[in-house]
Length: 466
Image (cartoon, rainbow, N blue to C red; front, side, top):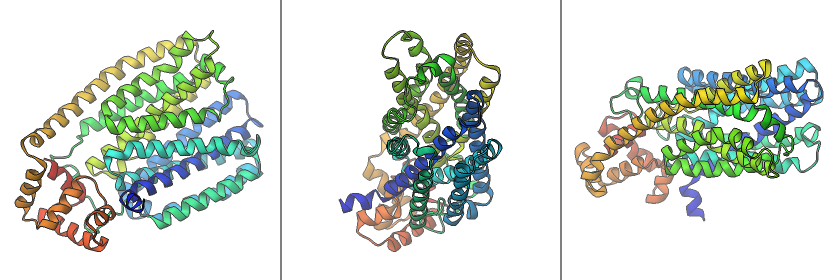
């Protein structure tokens, strides 16, 4: 058990931090949602909770990316994130104990900007310290814990989300997050000072795994998926049947879907993308087919489960891209793009309304370019994967390892270190496997970087696999 924990420390810690952050965010969302029923109409509640709130989250993500790109020594540090979580406490207290129509709306916007900032931190943290082969499951599992935890807390009492007791629960969760963050790592702090900075030159090198074209395609694909998801989950027919289903109980279905989606993403990203595309049209089609059926509640629940594929894909695809390209500030971009697009669509729907026929037409119009662009993106990924895998057919694992060591004049120990770096292992994991101290591993990693002339462990990993 101890060996398992030691070998998976980064995965476990990142998963725990993301889980409690999502649990906090979910509790804040539902507390705000239920408070709004005292002040606003159903139309205004929809506009604020998934319109202006999502837009504020998108702004928060954009701010974090800007800070991460230009002021990484500030934005990615634990002290900065701890300060953000501590600021949330008085804002939460104000929104619950001194609610008012205008004040509540202002506090919702402020809280969601902060949510966007620390979501960017958690995404970057996972991207920096979890192997790309496990990013999907890490995100899906962590998000599912937050979703399921919301439901568990809700069963304490019907009014728990709007009572003063939720303040104590939120404060305890924030305390846990603060302790976990302080005990762990800075988001961008790699194990070695020589690895911590990725220069512009290395980021744009010809052997970068993800090219700019694929980044643009992925952004556009997510930008189309986001409004499709919002339309499918905000059409009148769907909302009518949703009233028959407990809002917090939906989180249980969502949790199951997130875990399944994370496992599928890590196994095959193309299959995950296909499942995501299919999931976008599920809510509308199935409810229209079974609208007279007695299984509508189950269909609604299943729609939330399958929604997990979209949630995982929009996040994990950019986290993986960021890890493979060495541009860690791109990790939260998928969520940021999705939140902005979702907010715009929700605001338009609540303002002008959208009939059942209008929903079908708009979904059809968006579905055609989505399939075309997704196909182009998959083709590019397949060709890149096929091209990069050709050398692997020519060399065995041992031959590759020996060739890499001979090319750069590595010692036997440095050869082992390079192999583990190519697998995405952290210094702690390498130290556990080789029964060395982390300081010794850092020393060998530093020597590998010096001898290869590379800037960081991502470059070593890519060069090793070529």
